[in-house]
Amino acid sequence: MNATAQLRKLGQSLWLDNITRGLLDSGTLQRYLDEFGITGLTSNPTIFDHAIGGTDFYDDAIREQAAAGKSGEALFFNLALQDLTRAADLFRPVHETTSGDDGWVSLEVSPLLVNDAAATTNEAAQLHARAARPNLFIKIPGTPAGVEAIEASIFAGVPVNVTLLFSREQYLAAAEAYMRGIERRIAAGRDPVVHSVASIFVSRWDVAVKDHVPAELQNRLGIAIAQRAYKAYRDLLNSPRWRKLADAGARPQTLLWASTGTKDPAAPDTLYLQALAAPNTINTIPEKTLFAFADHGKASSSMAEDGGDGEEVLAAFARADVDDAALATRLQQEGAESFSKSWRDLMAVIASKSAALADNQSVERRLS
Image (cartoon, rainbow, N blue to C red; front, side, top):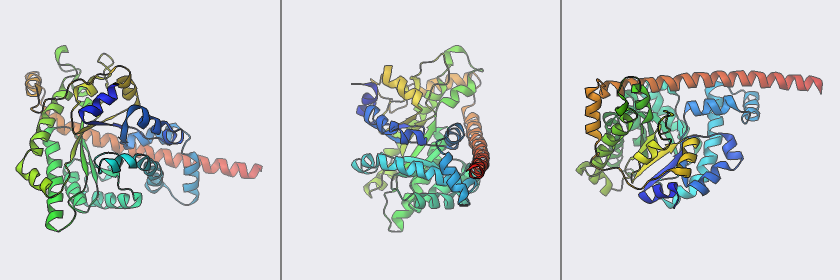
C-alpha cells in the first residue's frame, strides 16, 4: 500500500494546494486523482498570482475578456471560475459518492474585504451563485469580521472554507460561527446541511520562531498547535451542542491542515503529513510535498485525540519566551496582508497583460 493510500485508509483526505489552467489542460489534475488519490483542491490569491503571471496559459482568455470590456477583479473572477468549475466537475463524482463530505474546490473572496463583514457576505453569495456548482467552497478568512461573515454565509446556504486560522481559539471562533449559522437555519425551517471546512495553517508557526528558539524546539511548534486544535475539534464533535445539530441532520465542519509543505530544508520533506495524519481531517498540500510523500512518506499512526504531547511542547515554547496567543494574532494579520499584497500584484499583472496583449493584437492587425 502506497503512502497516500495509507492516509486514505486512516480516514484523511488529500487535496492539492494549487490550481493552474495547465494542470487542467494537460490532464495532470486527473492523473493526481487517479494515481495519488487527490480528492479536492484549494486556491488562494498567491496561487493565482503565480499561475497567471508566470505562464501564458491565460493569455487568450485575458485577451478575450479585455476585449469584452472586463478588467481588474471582474476579469480575474471570470478566469478563476473557468478553472475552478472545471476542477469541480472533475471532483464531482467524489463529491457525490461521499454525500458531499469530499470532492471540493475553493475560491477566495477578495482579500481587500478582510475587515468588511457585509461586503464579504455579499461577495461570497455572488461567487457561489455564479459558480453554480454544489462542490465549490467560498474561502472566508477567520478574522473578527470574517467570523461574522461565516455565520451569515452559512445561514444563507453558502458552503465555506474558513481560511487563515492559526490557533485553537481562532478555530473555535470559526466553529462557533458555523454552528450558529446552522442553528439559525434549523430555527428557520431550512435544510441543516451546509458544508464547511476550517483551515489551520501549520508551517508558518515554525518559520516565525526558527531564529528565536533552541535547536531541540525547531519545527515543533506548528505540530503542537495542530495537536491542540485537533483535541478541540474532537471535543467539539463529542459535545452535546454538536450532537443535537448532528441529530437534526447537520454535517460536521471538517478540520483541514493547510500550509503543510516543509519550509526548512534541514527538516524531513514529509514532516507535516506524517505528523498530522488523522481521521476525519483533510490535508491540502503543494505538488512538491505530494510527490515526496508518495515516494517515501509513511502514515502508520494517527494523531492522538487528546492532543498527545502538544501541551508539553507548548509549555517548552512558553519557557523559551514564545507567546503563542500573541503570535497567532500576528500570523493571522500577516497572512491577511500577504494575500492582499498578492491580490494587488495579481490585479497589476492582469492590467499589464491586458494592455500588452491588446497592443500585440493591434500590431498583428496592422501587419496583416
